[in-house]
Length: 436
Ligand SMILES: *Cc1c(COP(=O)(O)O)cnc(C)c1O
Ligand code: SF4
Image 1 (tube, protein in one colour):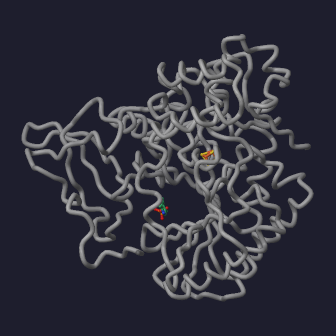
Image 2 (cartoon, rainbow, N blue to C red):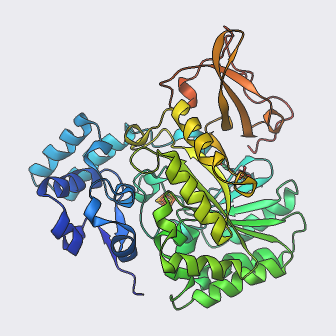
């Protein structure tokens, strides 16, 4: 299958756009797409989106900019600039003004950059003790862009996340100095936009360094959903699978952390074949997604998604709450509702699907898991815990927040029982593993 990519520049040429979208919808794409990233490909257009159900189709909502993703004020500002048919620089200036008002850097993502001998490793994030995030410079784009993406500032050129040739050397040196790290998670963007050759330039030296404490290599990817031909008909598809086998043969666990947001992404022949080929290498596939209005704010969609995944041999892993950035207002689901969706959804799968944890917020202090809503001493509360914490000792200690039906993020929550603060509000204490 030949890969064809569309963006703001050429989306009006897409047959289905011409046939199914109104002028108003195309205009909205133009305005919103000048602020938030927009990229889609022929597989998503031809095989995933149901064009008879526009604009409600979840895959359309997932990949095409929608009017409601900007506030009226932001929309009007961009619209009025475009109306004056200005130069690129002027559009970019207004776009950036708006982008800075969309909380481009939530959860202190840029605070977790480690150092080695005084050199900042800007392609690495080390927030939780056991797991290092690695951003290979060749993997900082995706086969299509999700409208909810929390990495969106990278794709519109606000953030530079590049570092030069020696990156694998620095990664291995860091791992050698940090035996507490058992997992390296290749992330992006999507590392599976890389050719097998490029990916081997990272993997081969890493395996050759023979670091005993490195037990798991994970690859965060949306490629199974947006471009399964990566593992089927792309010219280096077989080479990529050989590389997976090589990782497994090194005695390590290889896990694809696959992003799937809706059951429709699991139904094509291409994705099912790709999953089978990947599992055939000895790799495992774990799945994760945020819960989002317009896309999957419905427990039946989750049940169906988890059932499909289980049938294919994938392991449901996380349900997230959409982060407080970009178009969050559009997609936001109340924490209370997210928990109900999780509970209703998970009740209908057997124990092998109940490996999925959530809903979980990746916030500044850590991954905060909403365990449920209950009453304690006549006060209605959220019961929460950390799945991951800046301080590893915070993990799995239940704590309570006052019930608030409108809360959509950790910042909206107050401690229960008239306490002044949460136990973690004091910050990280002495024995925490921080990397500065
Ligand atoms: C989720 C996450 C990880 C991985 O956590 P696991 O619970 O091990 O899957 C690592 N680093 C960051 C910053 C994360 O958000
Ligand atoms: S695949 Fe991941 S990084 Fe890429 S646009 Fe979607 S959410 Fe963002």
